[in-house]
Length: 190
Image (cartoon, rainbow, N blue to C red):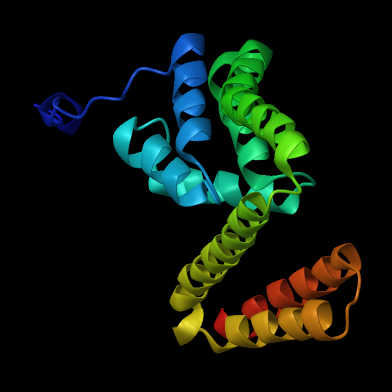
């Protein structure tokens, strides 16, 4: 027997998601994704539904972060396009944004009627604090894996100083620092 006939056969490749599965998957993600959906997107796409491997998810997310627009929006379009072409991209995108858009419109109407109510003003002050907390928590989660990589720490610190302190424009800063990061990683870690 050759190696090809003795290879284990229990390794199965999951079926590519249907257009309906893409829509419902991203619809659920949009409904539960308050304040930052990327950690939940990874769990849904990689662990629960197994549409992508960890490496495929990381590669695709890296590409989507470099493109203009929201990361999760880009990711939904890329995944839908990967599996079902343009129809899959549209289904994924519509699934992702349908519920949050309806909720935001509904809350906008409510806010328009009650914006001068002190209880509503306190509610939004609390929501702003919660949103800031979510951003800080996400930044810490992203930064923790970098603690053993000096080049990444330096690039992250330069980015913080450029954006938060010096108030430089985002796009030129990203282009310069991404190029510097690629060069430094190639030069000192290869």
